[in-house]
Length: 113
Image (cartoon, rainbow, N blue to C red; front, top):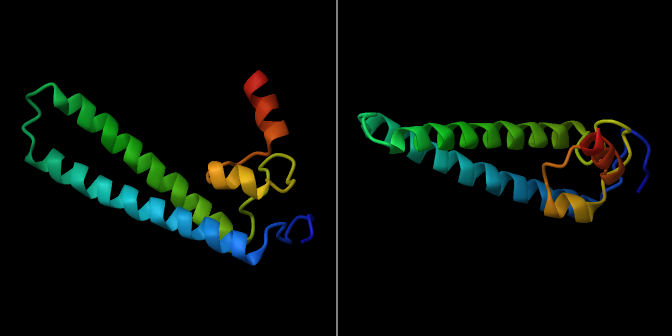
């Protein structure tokens, strides 16, 4: 497993596991979004839950976009690489946080700034 840009530092099995996790999350979020959209169509907007519904719709839509982007990066071979320094992000981090875009070092620097 080479750690140069363009070559994956993750094994085929690790990539398959991560792809499956991302696809399952995308399917789950897509079903959630459809349910929320249906709820929004049926709502009159007159009750207090309208604001919560809008927040939920926005959150689900954003999650779908992030998951789709992660799957796109996986398809192009950029998934699992730090968006700042291009170092490989460890499988353990991606398994816990599959949408991670930065290695831990860069993430800490961004959070400290």
